[in-house]
Length: 357
Image 1 (tube, rainbow, N blue to C red):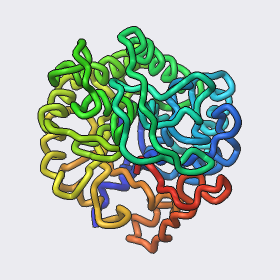
Image 2: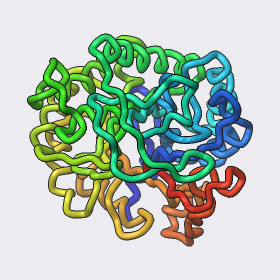
Image 3: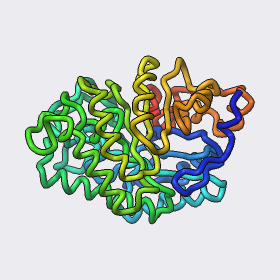
Image 4: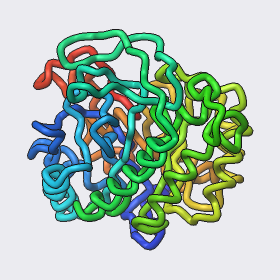
């Protein structure tokens, strides 16, 4: 059993108590106006023994919301609500980053104020349905962003990052994975643009790079991170040039010196590409590995063979708030209960999966 996982790690000037990361998972527990509640503060503080907590996806703007009862970081009330969360985590000795997630086309008009609709690089409707809070609904056709709106969206991310720092977060992770807005720009399936944000690889990675650059300029590189999921078909994403796209993206952001790159493996056979990404990105790499069932202590061996610097755990953290201690003893583990995922029974969400793990 490796001991490396339970030693301190220097993450861009911030000391982490261990190399165990709590992966971002949508919880849908925000109150009115997307403001985090006392329950949210309790939930994260309970898990502060993680070396690093990455929050559920937090929308950087009103139109960025993709699920019911998710929190934002675009209003004063939301900032004040998150301050209670970060204070609780820091009081318990933890480190916490906010994940900024614009859902893009993964959303529904019923979740947005009147007159607003989901937006995307192009007007390509996702296959399938999503939960709206009152039941399942078909996805609707998103509205393609104009060039001016893309530039404003980049500024939205930067403003939300500033709000995160004001709320006490140690940094932000930009969600470029799992079929949400940044990921939508990377894929030829969802990005049909013919302007500077579409077409070849260099143009399709442009939005992701511009968002990272804007956030770095706003809060500094050490407090900025990016999450990607190469080859992940989640949320009806198709990638035909995965290796080229992510190698180019890693090369483009490497000179910025961001705090870390967080990669999600879509399947065990993607491990070889994880090694390619590891070689292309010189900074800290967090790996959310593909495993059979919930990721447990066996994944910590990936620290020893150099596959990653830190390992992210998802669903197992829901059922085991003290997960680092349980990993150290190789269990026992409480089994994750799907009835508690995505808001749990208190929101009436009894059959919807936890997202983002």
